[in-house]
Amino acid sequence: MRRHTSAWAGLATASAGALALSLPLPAQARTDTAPVVRIQSGQVQGTAHTGYRNFNGIPYAAPPVGALRWAAPRPAVPWTGVRDAARTASPCPQPAGEVPGGSTNEDCLYLNVTTPSTPTGHPRRPVVVWLHGGGFTTGVGSSYDPHRMAVAGDVVVVTVNYRLGTLGFLGNARLPGSGAFGLADQQAALRWVRANIGAFGGDPGNVTLAGQSAGAFSVCAQLASPSAAGLFHRAIIESGACTGRPEHPFAPSAAPRSTAEQAGTTLATRVGCGHAADVVACLRRVKVPRLLAAQSVDQQPAYGTPLLPEDPGAALTAGRIHRVPVLIGNNHDEGNAWSAGIIEAGTSITPATWPDVAKTFIPDPTRAEEVVHTYPVGETDGGPVFGAVIGDSNFACPTLRTGSLLAARTPAWRYEFADPHAPRPSPATPPFPLGATHAAELTYLFDLGGKPRDMTPDQKRLAATMIDYWTRFARTGNPNGSNTPHWPRSTVQSLAPDHIGPTSPSPTHHCALWSTMP
Image 1 (cartoon, rainbow, N blue to C red):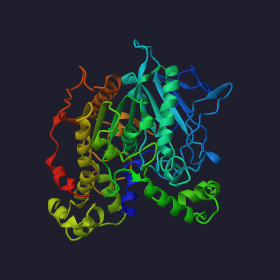
Image 2: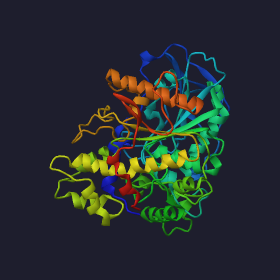
Image 3: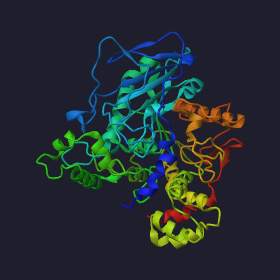
Image 4: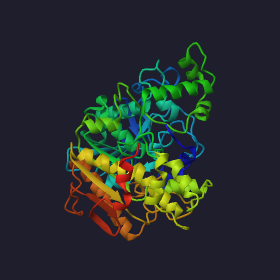
């Protein structure tokens, strides 16, 4: 499996690190009434705001600590009295990035619920369960403030924390659930939704599982997981094709269980447990900072397990997936953020260096000359050309392939987010314009870190249209409505401030080239 540490160094710029840990909403946005809701574990008291209510830091499973480290999630422990749900809970353990300073707190299996406060004419509202991205290494549900989506779309939105890194995906032959604990957490959260979301006005019979990047690939995994049957009824996949493979170093993918267990053996050796009489017991005694320091930069869920019997791409190709409606797409310039990060790390991309750079980062180094010919670099455009190679090979073309496979088996709507001037998710100035890069669409759906981004009137209209599409899809399984441009199932819908409508896949993606590589 070929991976590149320098490539993943750009991941923080591209997605997870481009966000900011969410903070409690400003006091002036709150109203005086603190809502209290009773769920199976006890009562929770949230916060009321103009038009919506928040319930944060609700445990959906017991803390995975001690003997529960690398165990299937257990039910949350009930409490007496009223639990304060005004503040978000700790992120799962991770290095510094999206979470300033990182986190070492394993007590992290919490979720957040945002629901409109206005009465509804429907018995229950549709539910959107959001899985964050971050390369299965970083991220936290509370980075995504979904109140605009909840209010405008009249839906209940749930954002979820799940175990990450080696704590979420350790492989060891002696561990039931080896390599898939983070995915098991996601299913536990979905079971919590089924049991409790009615108390918040949500419909447990109409749940949309949605995610971006690693969160999107998680949705793919859940589509292929037998134990996820019936836990969700629609799926939204943003920038994380189900056909991702380890040979592509930027997009999320799964790995065989044997690979995960080999990595687990390496980790055990690094932390001094390789020769222990009971390796698992030894690993459970290792402090979190030492585990984080020893884990690989590459984290993937394992397949060949009871939860995920086969690779999601293989399951999709064979038609062994849950047949639910799917909304899937990618961004026009996905790879630009990684390209910028790699350039900022010291890689120069010129006509002279381009052949060696291409050889280092493409799945098949023997095809570098063909790539250089197809994507020629000039004296000043090395960054965006390299970005196009990353974006096409890892995202655009695999997403088109995934969308076609899905459309042959279930209702599927496909999009390409294409705002060339999308607000940057990070305040840092990149070495070249990033365009519609990885994670750029998120600011149109969420207030990242609880902070709205500045937008032009046309961008605000695009954001409203996207929220309408996403939430109408969550309501009915079809994004179309009377207030938005028609979205045909047979084409890709372009989403840009100056154009919302059908478009053909761009020939500049050169998918014929990438389809013949590993």
